[in-house]
Length: 360
Image 1 (tube, rainbow, N blue to C red):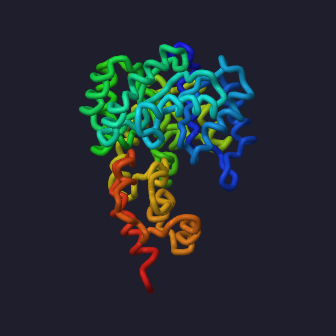
Image 2: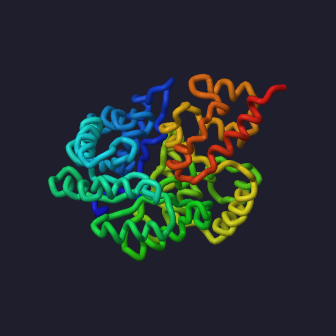
């Protein structure tokens, strides 16, 4: 199914360059041009990415500027945008229009887990995608996934027509009990499903290692993480959420050509994993799924980043000026239900309230 894929690097449109509150279309267009010029062709978006700005950015920077046959485009059916089966088709065609295309190469059931899968079943979402494929609007049907290997087995078994799976895979999460990347990869391989990797640098965490950790690597932390993911058996593509031209150039160099990690690199990664698992950082990847459902509009990823950096109150006031204070959390748990990392968000927000809002 990946016969038209050029190279193993995919351009994820969840972390595009931003100016103010909008996508920097000139910068994104230049990056898209460079990506295609370098011999790659896979773009990935979703309806809710960047508060709905990702799909229109794809249209302006890619679809309206390049022949349709020159690129592959993946989009997703996200659970927050439909409530019943009748909602799916209008949503789908609005996505085609937003992206400026007549079909999607890949269409994914988004972020599947035990928390939302029953809704997709109740709404016949998988069958609806298969119908849209038969009508020529989708070339391949798959799903992205955040749960256990056992639940991945269940979804694949109940939907044997799916053609690929998108998994969170990076060297830190291979044996992470909240992610279980190794086990999920094994399930996909057993079913002969190609794997698209997301979060290969874990939201940037693996690209920003402390100097004492990166010194043992033969390449940059980001390059090492990408080479690790791309070198795993069964991986057809690695998505990278590139937001700067510098990141684009580094990734192009990494995949042109792609070199496997040495035994020395792999040994170094084991030591890095040991250190990262004990550093106490909140493992947030800044996907912002939580902020999309937060009734108080708390800037959760930004707050967690400040906790990780031990930032002061001034930074906190700046980060929360447009949204809710952490003390306004209703403890409704909506954020935790959609968090791909399965973080105890409410607990961390209580920590932040104690640090940043307690009276002197």
